[in-house]
Amino acid sequence: MEALCAREMYRFSRRHPRYLLAALGLYGASVPRWSALRGARVGFCFLQLVDDVLDGDRAVVGEPLDWVDALLVRLEAERGGDEDVATMLGRVFLAELRDEGARADALQLVRTMRRDRVRVRERQELDAAALRAHHRDTFRLSVDLMLHTARAEVRTLDAPSLLDAFGWCSAMRDLREDLDKGLSNVPAEVARAVRAEGSDPWDAEALVGSVAGREWLVAEHGRARVLLSQTGAELAALGDRPGVALLRLFHRSIEGFWTKRLPRRLPFLRAPASVRDSLSGAPP
Image (cartoon, rainbow, N blue to C red; front, side, top):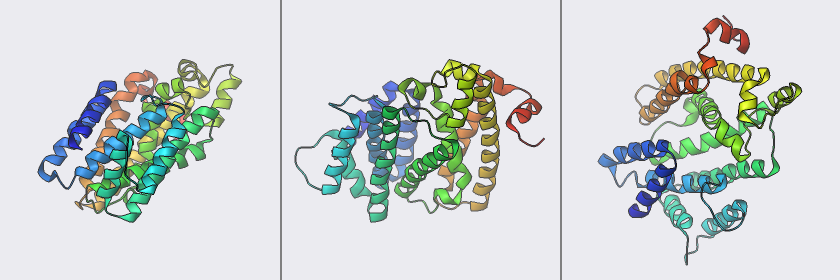
């Protein structure tokens, strides 16, 4: 199983350097507690493999929705026999969780991830409230599972602002890539405003070049700043409880994306604070 995980992490890392950083961090954290964190390593590989299939980054025979539905049937049936890589990883991950509630959350996370494939096939545009609810569901399940496998004493509900910051970061980080794949994390309200200008909200360049698109991106950047500040206060209140260090690591990573990486992609986010605030509606 360890060799299988190493092979999968290598495949993920070849596709994008961020997975190499994730793998190095996971293996580094595992060194002093190798057996205890086996579930974290296997779970990462299982969930990333499922995500890659649903995103179209890992080819399967037939429709990815059919593939993931068959996977869920096999995992819930708890039967052995000839199994593919995803099923083997999934069985070990569920066994390592050692908790029925956590196992149910793992299967529910796969179903939640499945929704994005449906959104792609149906070319759905969700409103802002629906998008935020979907992102909250996704990251509550995924981060709580990570905290569970790390034997943490905290959960995402202890730092709710971080949950929304995860959703913001994911949507902004993968905005162009997702649109190219047919997945829109642009609120339907914004998409309508972009179309009213004569631009295509499914085209990243057209979206960023439109007035409505830029106003939305600036407003989201301002909203994320508030979320990150609130997260800092929430984490400080948690003290040094087991698991808080992991949440702080996530917080720092999203801070770095907000401060440096996203403004490098979208230089207009480096505008003076007074200009950003006027566009985002934030108080001075």
